[in-house]
Image (cartoon, rainbow, N blue to C red; front, side, top):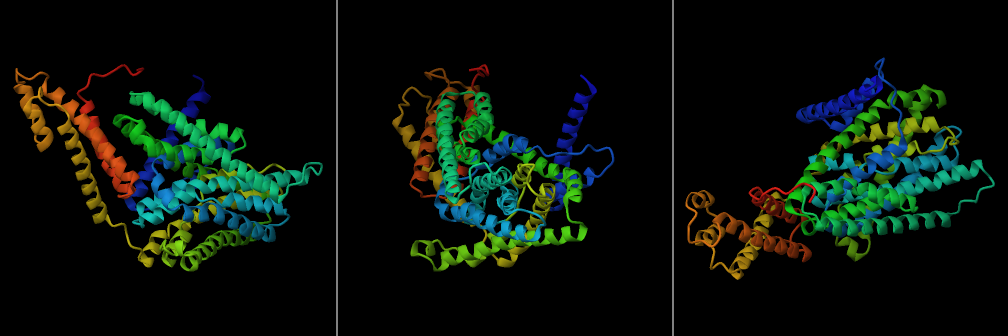
Length: 536
């Protein structure tokens, strides 16, 4: 192995070790891990001997973004997203469009020698929030479930709107530099957006259906997880090639497969997939923020060569950062007004001013913004300076997100009702166990050791006794009888839970907790089964 290969491996290992160490330390002292990682990376980038980090937009868009979106999508409740689709669409489409126009016009006014098309391109770059950072902050705070659903749904879907707007702005930039090209019209932008949405959603649903059918035939968790790992790329890349939204394709496929997981996967496969994707998401999402910090030195060099000077740069950065914050705040006040004084069906949603303020503060930018700004063509006026400004927006919104806990405390938003959730879990468990007992009564148990049935009904310890005293008159070994009958009960319990979910009688969080408990018990039953070769 040559020295360059060894050096690359050393850098990758060091990258992972630093990411894990800094994230763990930040969690212990109660700091925001993304902010600490950016600061550490920025400091390291100026150390002599550290190689300059350059951002490859295709690597981020095609290599990092799909798995990050998929990891978030499979853990997001489709039922909750469907229930809050009005608020999510107002943010993921309406707010993005409002931000593109507001920030774009502001950039056109304050950034020297920038064209209107380049200004709108910059507005599209900084419009989408970051799913990783938003999920991390929302998960740490005790926000109302409805608010968390809206924030997560927005961050999953707004990337598609922003990238479509960016593509339109880039087309305008290229058209301006090549007058013989076809003129860009508002109708062409609308048509491009419609095509991106239809193709993205359609292809994502197709991928979910096809892979769901294939995974239902697999019994090996290794094979199932292997297929799961390539799913985001199978959805993203072809959708992009078909001029659709790869982001929407990944999100739709992830939501569909996550919702259908109890039906198409074994319990072992679901547990393995959850653990693997949590690990991948942790490594990628935190490594991205370290990567953002490491790229600072290179971005700063370009900004110094292309920018207007130190003090004008500080002023421009402050104005654009303020425009980003204000555009979100103003749109949320408009949205809240619509909920408060609009049609009756919106007023019944119960969206308060406090909710609007909380959402307005949670506008954190991240990896998509950093990658998108490097998609700007070389002929873009002030390209290097715009890259630096995008970095400022990312860091500035991350720092602004650090104040979200303080804002939440001041707003006194009601935390999730954990006691109600616990009660729902117990009620749903009782309902599921009732279905399991009914299945047991329907199953013929005449040839089964009576102790097995007693164990199943009374949940008493029995395996140790039956192993010591197998019972010669039993038609089949007691442990085997127990496993067989308990599996039938678990199957009925899972069906009862899914029925309750379909009827909307319980919160999705309670449904998922009960399904996870059933999966754990089913996996425990698999421990005693003989192992099959991994290729089957």
